[in-house]
Image (cartoon, rainbow, N blue to C red; front, side):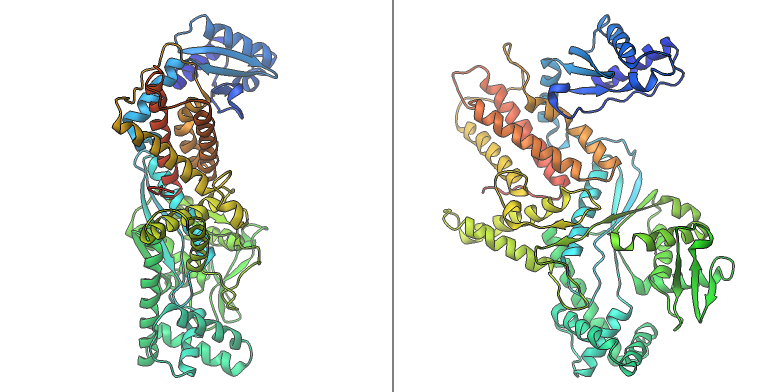
Length: 566
């Protein structure tokens, strides 16, 4: 049992002794380190049950804790309206530093999820379209959430669900046929064909009918020329996507396709006619408002007898479970389908109730540049690849005077560029829209990914310097040492990871790392870390090493690499 758990248990015992029936005690991290290392509002929660004022109950709890202080506490403070703040002594933090150095990047990990099986579905780019910055956003969030869940002890399988059939494919293939193109060479070609097909689709009933006919033949696989274009276009797209996944640091365990889940989804809908689904003007619909006035009607099988996204998603949930019997399925999408997903979950709850309970939908906002919104249908798309290259070029410009080989500059600049983009996405609350600011996001000072990478690289360079001198890293606390805020922040990392995991919010890790990096920079500015004449120098080096471990681990949770130099 660690110190925090001991405090919780002792407070519970005190409250039970005072007459509280079921005391719930929680230690929270205060907004500022001056307010203590941990704080509890339990006195305000339980005061009414004991007919006492919160401040009086807080003082009583403090008095009983102080009278038997074997907790390694420096002091306990009570502040209005009834908070109890706990300050730990330097030996406690010395043990934390030892633990970090011993566990290295393992520090902060736990088994709080107890080997729970979780499937996380994210990214979901569609073949025949380009991988745009919306997919970059989904990939960044999904990868980070996967890593945070793994850090809490769960077994995670990453899944990617792709729309390899549907009108977008039919529009692309129709345009290729019209232009007498029978070989798909790259994604740009198929994406341009999709844009052209989309522009003409609504222009006349004849073209619309032709595209719809192509769509039916894609499903039925009855036309050899269409089959060849389809198979080539799909392969080219999937190979292209893999190059981006590798660059972003994602490796999927499962790939699911609409062509694969659509048949089962349609069968599932048809089996539940007319009890759950019903016919409507030649289509099959689910009337969500019958079950909840805040829901609406969605089409599950269209007038052409083809399954819609809704039917496919229904089939996907079951096929996912058959492939990997998950305890929880996390689905990450853009927030534009929030209302649609609510209807889907209601339909799922009536057909696959256990799977509906296991499904958690997380939605994110849009990633925008100052130029505005994008649309794959009109061709005004900012691809993830082009954005990474643009950021990389700006970084290379900053690095032009560095005496580093061109190959090394390219490698480092890509790591920094991807880190800058990922941090810009993850520092925000997941549901919010983001406008990517080039200058702020590439700054080596302040709230940015490069700032975090630079702080880690600089700390690493300090540790490399002592390899050639007699000075050693020593985690034993010097006698005259006063606990620093750097130690306090290092101690909080496991709690931050736990909170980020329970709330599915990587922003907690991002915010923490900025605070930690700032505290290390202040520590670096006010303490001479390498000093062979100073007896505290070995411990300062230990703090630096602990900082590197936590920063590296925290950045890894965000999917951000640390370059060898900057």
